[in-house]
Image 1 (tube, rainbow, N blue to C red):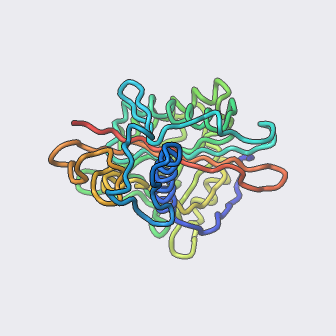
Image 2 (image 1 turned 120 degrees about the vertical axis):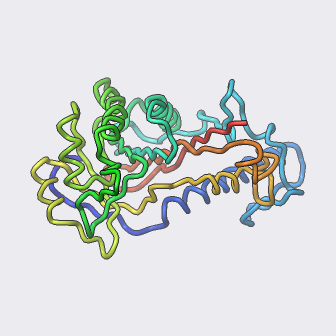
Length: 303
């Protein structure tokens, strides 16, 4: 993917948060079904949307624990991977940092997320890594940064330092050959002007979620052309995985996976804090066909 002034619009398909939650739920059910088939027990109904309490399978049978990390469901990396040689694919990875993610923890989060994708696809590198920072959104109607009584909270000096600290880890992945190109999400021209001078490896891509008939501001088009940044439009949600969604997916109520005894434990027991979601796609270059697509998500659960 070459840097340039073009604007590439992605087709409006299923919203990424809906796609993610549906994928997670289906994956949980499929893993439980595999366990019950192996044990000759009644399998959960994969045609339904939820798993009933009577159908729920003991989580210890279909999850894996390594130290303080629980993989839900267990991952068999030997069964994954792309079919053809690495050179035949364009592999794009988008990492969403969620609200309440500590900036100091993002370095490890980036390394963990990229490592999972590389293991899943059985490849040594990816072509494009895009980062979506929390609490940053693009407003096509008003590209100027909005300030409240406390000033600009998303491009102020302290917040900008946090963004750059995260970017440094991505730059290291570029320098060691793990990532070919780096990208941003939801950066307008004013935010780019503040961000670019502080980078060592400049972003090749800026992904923007444009509403209201996909009107891209002329100021951003001109600035992207000047800086040789490719503009892409997308259909992703910034807050792609909320606390409530996680409680619904892994909680103990009807439809949950039963990893928590009570789906309402956010205040009474375990504190759930979604940290990040990573989305990956492997496209066959000659045919433009998506061969492999998926998600990983990480949530902290504190007692």
